[in-house]
Amino acid sequence: MDASTHAQFNIHPEWFKLFPSEFEAAIKIVETVQNFAPAKESIFKAFQVVPSSIKVVIVGQDPYPTAGDATGLAFSVSRNQNLPKSLQNLFKELKNDLGIDRINGDLSDWQSQGVFLINRVLTVPIGDANGHKNLGWESFTEKIIGYLGQRGAVGLLMGKSAEEVGNYFEKKVVTAHPSPLSAYRGFFGSKIYSKVNKLLDEPINW
Image (tube, rainbow, N blue to C red; front, side, top):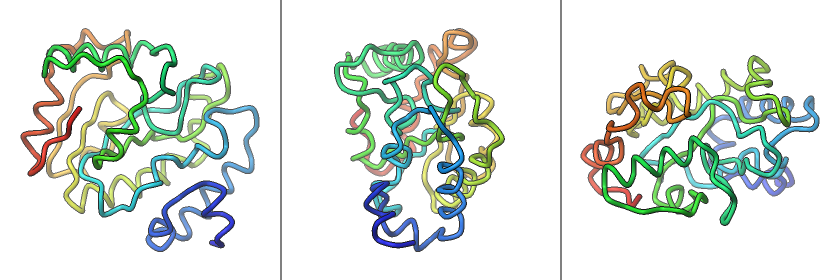
């Protein structure tokens, strides 16, 4: 993989060393899709950090399908953007669990502390949730997630799509998805943030 690809997608070069053929296949997927979210340069935003810095893996399903919402980090939106319902519910549970009032939906500060915010599927057609399922993203992200789990990262697995990779994590917190359709089936009151922090040597400042 050449330097121009590194620059185009802003992927830390260590990922290419670990998974050269997987990233080649992933970039071919990008070349086959049109009119999708997030922006092309943001698809691999979760991979901006060196793999060895990752302590927690949060697994989402696919990016927000509303134009302008998805940033390349699972569940995250741009600063000052209106919060999608799932993110609102994540913040409600944060308040319930740790007493933290958060209104900024840009989760880059979590990423900078070693939280890997990865969707199982990295692109979505605008307006068509889960429309890029079965394009090949799942096998790519499973490889990455499996590697991080086997390295000892803590898995925060919310919903059925995330639970499919649960076997890769020795340390994990599993709960319902924070979407309005399932948040009342066990997500609210799950205390995911404090549970994850108890599994870490150095807690995350959520």
